[in-house]
Length: 597
Ligand code: SER
Figure 1: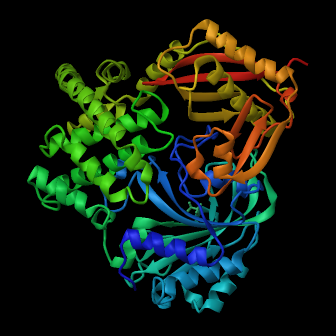
Figure 2: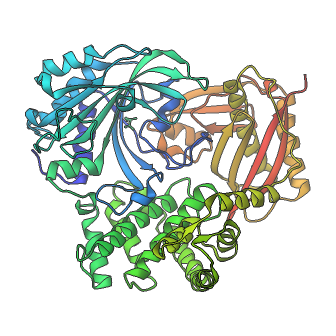
Figure 3: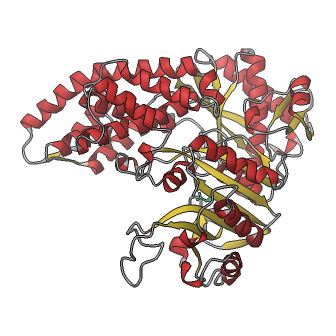
């Protein structure tokens, strides 16, 4: 088995697939574009969903990449051996090109060939889909594994719970085959399999055979093209290959842990609490660095991604207090992460100043509130009868003292108390309702399907950006976009609130373009040509050499993956329902298309 660093594994993996005809595409942003269902990119396949559903990818039908991902569902588990909120996923894709046989044979070759990972084939175990009413038993995959030389007793048939993959609840999905490293530990019982968590089998790779599009009513519609979507966790695989127990002891984290030891004068491993605190700081600061340094970019705030970021930074600050670190030490950790990753993720280098400034600001803000907030918390605790902190108090700590609910919960837990979360959530919802603008007209139905509604809003977004630049100037640049069938949401750089006149003028420009019935023309050209022509588009680094440029007459020319309306006259009437601050220096517009039949 090859001892390998994370850096070498990235290169080795991408080269392997490049040699086999795959275009290497850069990691997409951590902030999904146009997907309102999730806050972050959670898997390598996430940015590729439109292409898995059949849209043509400008780079072809064989792709490979290393994708930045964030999952915060298990944030409370961070601190153990394996959980992280940020991770990198190695992936290769076939968009309607090769399928099960080629995918399995390449995975086998990459894992076992001495030129690549050189894992002894007898240390591999695999699982395949056991079959049910939706999809038959995957004997086909099992037969390819046997052809590779995997013995029958190392092939496990598992149900949907284990061997079926979908991101969220709708969209492209299908059965998968998963590949495990057998640690050689004795089986935990006669039913021991990769499905149990006894630690005998460690997952390395997941190859999904995507052949359905799951609808919101649960039906599975077969896809016209059969796809392969594979995912391999970078650090987890480095652990397996090097016989390391914890991701925090891989080459990515070791310099960070050393630095934390030096700054705190405490030893990693000296106590469970110290180890946990160091891991939490390392994990959370890394995620914060990647979120702040992302090309789309997030800054700490009280909503959506900004809230998660704030929570990560504040939690890291709290644990840094526990280790006795000084103000400014977390910045040193962040700077070290930038150093470790900047060759692979150049955006971290480009955004260094922003990362450090925002971290500094948030730490300062939090330290100020922390002191008064902890005092307030103790006052509450001293007066408390019983062991439950009520929702109103928890909300006051959040609203007035900037304590995320999780922090109140943690402080409470340390004292054997609990928090009325339901009460907190009710207060929170009440507060949100109060601060919501209720004037916007609600748009309901009228379009053939949600796909069409979304498509039209995509086109409206281009017209909006072009109009904003006309009204407010070239300072306006897209900072984020999120579309659902009912509305578009567009974040852009601008230093002050828009005036009523400016909002009205912007609406008028968009509606004029709609009235003018302008055809929307798409061309696929090289990124340089697109730039030369003056196309705008912030997400250039996400695409490779060729990009799609959508031109709407003389109004707008923008790089974009699409899809779009064929003509602006399909759009209906454009209404801005809200203009508000998103974060410092960034405004947010919500807008809808009204159909007047
Ligand atoms: N989508 C699968 C996963 O995330 C394979 O890439 O594991």
